[in-house]
Length: 254
Image (cartoon, rainbow, N blue to C red; front, side):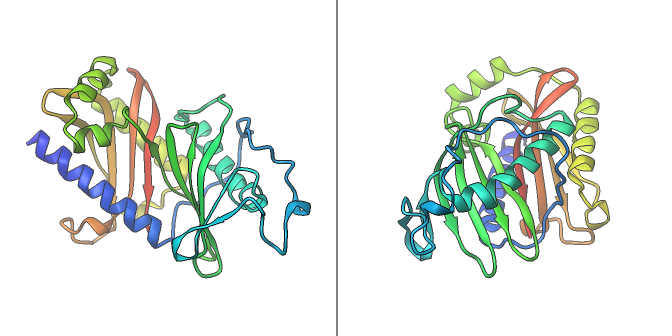
């Protein structure tokens, strides 16, 4: 049953990720409280580098998207401020996995929904994120690990080697402690609890591999629990001690 639950969760996470990246509407409000981490961007690339309103380092991509780099003034001026707010919020909640680390960016892709912008990118070679700015919502829609140490990938691919490595390095945390941390993170993120049922919080495991992680899923109040699209907010933490943790996955849908 644990394996089936884990696989269902991974499928749901993938489904939600696709949905979140393609339908940016409402989301969690975020406020800038603490200083942002150092960012390696060569951000001195200002408007003078623009040519006919377009940064010359851009390359066209399908569906009208563009590929660019961290020097793009639109990325610097419109995306980075929102990213800093998100990390400042994680700092307040005490779950920033990149705390005090300089950030670098790669594989930046910008899309243009009506009257807005959506940007997908890779950070520090190990994290992916999606930021959106529209009249309805501005903020982070996706944040998570990538690569061999991505626990969701290890579970979905049934990668025994990765699961063994992750479980051997895992730190165990009591369920009660995880629930307190997740509730604190939700409050810090400004989750509107009137919109959601009480979150389902459970350890993320597969077979006998305990990854030291807990996931919370928030379903729209009064909605069908079998419909995965009703789970509009989802976050996962990984224990760094029996009483502390970092955020390793965040998904927010419309």
